[in-house]
Image (spheres, rainbow, N blue to C red):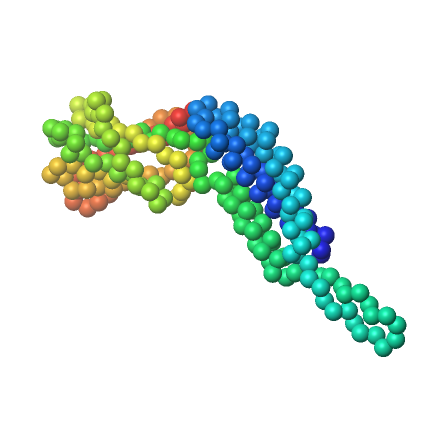
Length: 235
């Protein structure tokens, strides 16, 4: 047990030394536009800090990670030397910190909350009913995309509208980045009640080759505005 805790203490020190030295070099180097300094600090200089940190972690264990316990008394002969055992508080702190780091690595690197394909573009089209005109001012059109726990509001650029089969179409796009099973799109226009469509994408979706079928929001009494969408990778 002493060897295991001592080794884990060294590993914790190595991680602290690696990242600490790398971050110190990055901080002292100033702005890094192309990322070269950060890469060099992490992969070339950081390992030196890991070696120093490992030694420091083992030394900390030898100093604080062991406690003496009284040796059993004997009636005859010289008293036995006191024995050393692992300090329980020290072991709990080391194991808890490593468990937290392991969970963080699993969450960020393995179960990463970000999409596998990186940033992806959700292109949306809203087809108005026959005879319905576009709003005079695009500023009055508000589109909100709900992605997990965040809300995104795409702005309407110069090419914000088009037409399909003689019907006016509002065009918008937004960048998605998070893995989530809950996505929806809301549309608000002057004189029209807000409508919401569910975006039926997987939690970690793949790019789509074309747009989905047009469909209504399904809200009772709503103006029959149809929406479709497609998802494309940005890289």
